[in-house]
Amino acid sequence: MVAACAATASAAGDVSETARFPATGSIEIAFTPRDRVDRLIVAAIDNAQHEVLVLAYSFTDRSIARALVRARARGASVRVVADREQARSLPQNVLQDLVNGGVEVALEGRFQAAHNKVIVIDAEGPSATTITGSYNYTIAAQRSNAENVLVLRDNPPAAKAYRDNWLHLNARALPWPGVASP
Image (cartoon, rainbow, N blue to C red; front, side, top):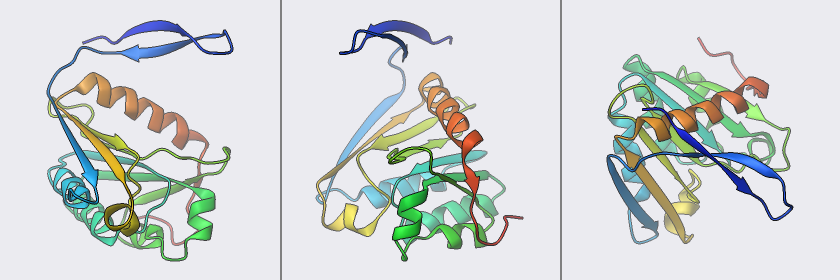
């Protein structure tokens, strides 16, 4: 499938390209604190076969971190781009744990906030999965906040678009300052 792009006008009057894809696969929606979004995300990562790409604003949830390390141990490529200021200001972040588990971690600091919350799983395969929404990968997001997550399964064009955005952001991100990944 080839993505169709449509020109859209912004409030300022400029024209930008947005990606538009046919609706394929399935969509799952969950809300915290009533739904166990953390378990939904862990289950999706546990099904990863080849690649997991993460864009994270805040990342303190150890169960999600452990799932990423397990995916890496199974041989999947697992890479994370996190917001630099959140990484610096949250001493309980799990980024060094990820690096210690063989996960590549980079920090994005060019923007006021690298506020993406996205996980792309096996974008090149027919069972491509994209997870996005307001949900930060934190205990507070699960227990204390009103958050949402959208899981797009079996929609490779959408996953590839998110993967391309991940690659764009990662190209300018700086490697995690801790121990180098193997």
